[in-house]
Image 1 (tube, rainbow, N blue to C red):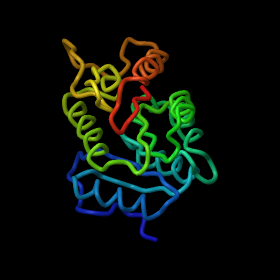
Image 2: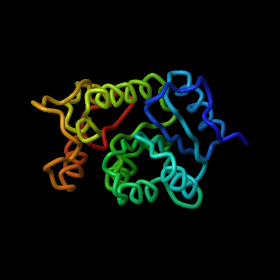
Image 3: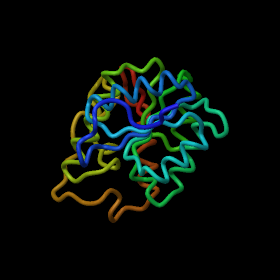
Image 4: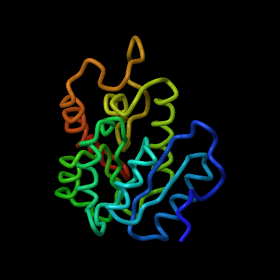
Length: 196
């Protein structure tokens, strides 16, 4: 099995995305799509492999299935959030588990967004494009969380107003990120539920 990124070579400085799904075809299809869009992508097929790849690859975004072998997606999210750079990662649950209790558990584990399978590729690309724009503006996932969500949208539509770009979480306690995720989680969504 070739675990190298699929699709076109990513430009230098491309957003790093880790796709984690135990359905190899699903993971590789998403990887191919994202690679063709210019993202630098790696795949993992279980929770343990996801943690190892994240440690080496340093993803900016993780598209993470919840029902994984070895460690569940919930456990992977908790462990990633427990790492020093964990607050800087945009965690997106992409799962067939779409009931309210599943979204609640995802929020508690630290996910920022919840997409129900089959995830609309346009929705995934929109979420990643927003992340890319904020990154280019010198902002991080914490700014995604502070962005106003458009009615009916699953993710924020633009950067939060700020007088000066600053590192995510600068001058804020780490718990403010969790509070931001909790406050935006129940925003109306079309195809996505904000966990943040």
